[in-house]
Length: 441
Image (cartoon, rainbow, N blue to C red):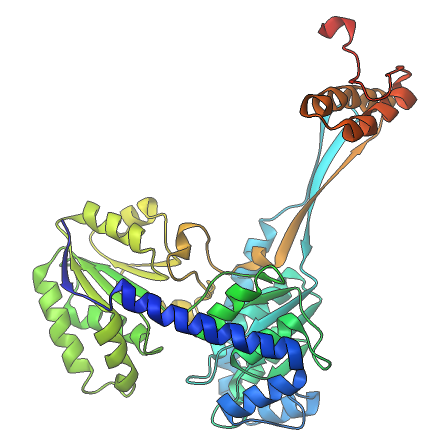
């Protein structure tokens, strides 16, 4: 049985935290619903100390902000976006419209149609999340979304030039310097100055994730992408420094970012703890990472790879870094996670920033039932049907009539019957099922 070498906050404590967030978000969304732009402005002033004449940036403002970046910085942003676009386009190309004739005269098909307006939230209050713009805005652009709205909070009292550049280059049609619940609420609910969107996407803190959860149904959402989670699955093929670096590299995201090590090696567990203590003395973001590791860090010692696999699928972490003597075995057998990072040569930061896969991923065990954000999330697959011959209209109508009557839906049956009468010349009594043909008796 797996041993917990280091434990995190209890489930009870986490549930209490979630309940507090849930209540606060509910009150704030109700305020936005009631007061609109005034509530949004008050909330921005309260949480971000930011209240400009307009939250929406003009093209001149965008260009001026981009002018603050060096050509090399812009080239780096463009390179990352090219990787994201290339992979998203490959995914889009795999999604085909279809049309088939399932029987003579019966045509069935589906079309993949872009969501018509999307709100992309790009976090940026603590760290300016440039890469999140690529993942949401650029991917929506590849999908062909005709209206892409992007919101990001001010960073140190003003728009962050790199984030704004990434939004603009990614293809955003409207850019607002607005953060947190007020941004998500304004995009979903709408105000006099912000037309509501059909779908919300993007990661965020616990408050943003909860706001998306509460708004789901009113708008679509990509997934519940809350505070960052990371898991390292490792055996004695790697060392404590590498594992500790990968754990703390994600723990620095926030004070509530779970970081878990699954290992079969007690030595690696010991060495990782020692390395974490050492790195926390030199890591510039140690103030955040230390609290996150203390409250949400775990080390679980397993007897073998099968037990590590079972634990990993149960935890269903957002990021899963696999560094073992059988990485592809985990690829073949894991079924619940956000994204896999296979082998010591890659790492979660590659996926976060540049390699091309999307970094907006399921958290809080949502990997059990959904994958991460991808171009397909911005597309709706709509089916259609048509009947092109009288014979097909009659045959399908006869079956439909009888099956509707079997369920007691007389009105449904008459939709079929009227066509059997018109296109087949069969005199079906009103409110009865179509008769069987002689050869089907």
